[in-house]
Image (cartoon, rainbow, N blue to C red; front, top):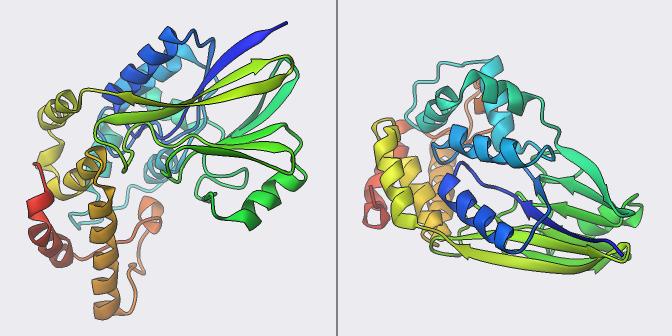
Length: 297
């Protein structure tokens, strides 16, 4: 009889403080293997520290859309003068060359087998790092499980609270968000799979506290606030369990761009910036003034 415990961690977003707390809990639970589902870096400026931890404990690592953004920026270092996403450039340049080359080689999905249990791991979906599989999207879940050549499909990306269910006799698991969950204050989500008797006997949805004040101190010391305080404040609002602020900010920014230009994107955007909603500086800074009561930095 083989018993295997596997920790599945998604969407760290450079939050090395949260990751260390999760790893400590996983070790207490006698986890034997780790799988990382992408969005390892970007959003918080501790990419090297995060990747050092990840690379030291697992070779089962995926890229997410956040890694893809760095890869795209590496191809086309577009000189976009707007304030928005200067922090992304900061975090790109923070990465060591070795870590940048490492994330370039990561796959966006992989199959792993444990004692005859075959699992398909992905960041967003088996199709892409960008596609989102939400709990209420029965049609999409059915599409990916109907002819799934594995016993389970496990992913992250949506930042929904962790959930799992069985569809078409396949286990479907969303591992939540380790680094910037919008639902909790200073708590990280991850999943432990208990594999025994040739099947996944139990799925543990874990919620782990970490030192949010230490994270705040590290952000201030990193120098990233000199680039743009707005995005970092919006990210930190999610860490504080107030992800609605970030959502409302971007929603309002998009509507203002649509009113002004009839679109919220720029025609000449290249590389990384083709992925983003690119807002004019006056809209970005005007909304920062409106939402400043929610900002910490």
